[in-house]
Length: 175
Image (tube, rainbow, N blue to C red; front, side):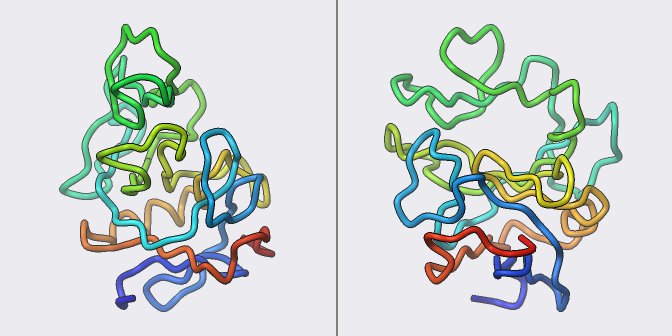
């Protein structure tokens, strides 16, 4: 671990000398991630991208990429584009990145099962805003939107999301 890593703890994410409240997947933390299990995977996950809605927020970092109408994320393990950003029209299973709600106005993308995705091992582990404190995600790590913007401004592509194996099998309190 390095000082610039985001480290998931039982009470939130430790980063830059602070503890940031967060939520994780409804399935808790797992060492055996599978598509659709709702769990947040154990591991050291590189930050490989940052996406944002330019019609809703200012560019959060110089290396952030705008989410355009028609941007999607493939979550179909049977498709060759599994766990990749794709464009509409796209007829395989996917998730819209440009949502009506603000959940994905800012998305920090990790390298979970990317770029050479193993079918069924789970797609896209993002850091994004939470629906509300304590409300679980589908496997991502979610933060207060103000905290997420502050973290996005401070991280670099060398930052990693560290999910310790010691959290496997449980849903962190306060996280």
